[in-house]
Image (cartoon, rainbow over all chains, first blue to last red; front, top):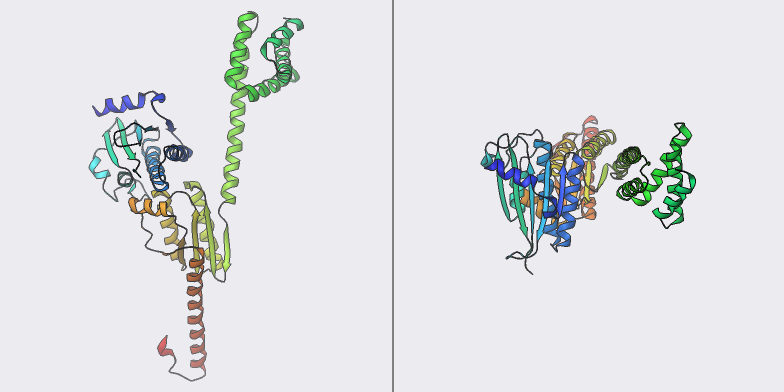
Amino acid sequence: MVGEKIETLLESPAHEFDVVVRIAREEDIAVARQMAKQLAQETGFSLADVTKIATAVSELARNIYRYAKEGRIMIRKRLEDRDGPCIEVIAADRGPGISDVELVLTRGYTTYERSLGIGLSGVKRLMDSFEIYSEVGKGTVVITEKRRRKF
Amino acid sequence: MDTGQVTGIVGKLSAESRQRDLWRQFLEAALAGSQDEKATSGMAEALRSLLEELGEKEVADRIIDIGKEEPSFPVTDMLRAVVEISGEMRRENETTLKQLRQMLSELATPIIRIWKDMLLVAMIGNIDSQRAQDIAERLLHRVSSSRAKVVLVDVTGVPMIDTVVGGFLIEMFNAIKFLGAEVILTGIKPEVAHTLVKLGVDFRMVSIARDLEDALRKGIAITMEERNRRKQLALSLAGNEAGESGEDDDL
């Protein structure tokens, strides 16, 4: 079921999103971050929230690059949402997958040398909502949102 | 096709005289079919200018249009030439980009001796792993060779600190401390501070200053203290040699 979800998301047409960045090289992380930043600015997010969104995208793209080698970052703004404007970030890959999702969300857990192990749990705290689906051998999808605060 | 036909086709292709010239040049060279180097390089040159001015899609569409009107026109060969030339252009762009990136990393992180025994590192722009490595290496080398006591690290120009950049900074700070120097961090912007707290990146191992002025003041205080301590030590050592004791108690 998770595998299907990953496939549908990875196959989803590019025109459904405002930004689609293929992550395969380290430079792509900076591109994804920059585009997320620009979209968040256009949507009218505060500087603090723009930085948070850009940082979250950076972490997600970094995870794809490190563990799955290749994947996609997809970002769209939803202006007509019930709770006000919102930015949705989806990170999807066909990488090795995660056997224990709870464990990777623990602060300080990492399988990567020299990493702080706070990336994914950090993303959860930077954004307003956070969902993760993963299956070993199939891949991983992270769906996360940030809503614009009302003034 | 003869020259008259070429002129006819070229006339339909573009209203601009410069582009018409380029098309003519390209078509004449292409249709001459000669294999000598001068002709092929002439064709490549014209095609390159056309691609630069019109873009790949426009050029390809036009070539297909010519093929429709003139069945003898070698559309496949021409499209192959277009693919080859745009591949060449892409590779050239990549090389330029690579060189620019290298230039940027050389320019973007000056290490300045700002005071006696004190270095300033002003980091600017996004930091990737390659740049991080380069900065850390140069800085550690400089700290060791200049025997600096204090290193001011200014991150005003860094738009975003994620866990990777944070991790890199922590590693670098710890390494500097291993060399026996103090680190003072400054220039963390409010939005970055917020993100760091959310991520849980902890810079507790270094002292943090509000701005560069504050950092400089703190740094000077540390170097002065160090110098005074050394002066006292030297005095008391001299005193001991002269046979007057009793002053080493306060060391």
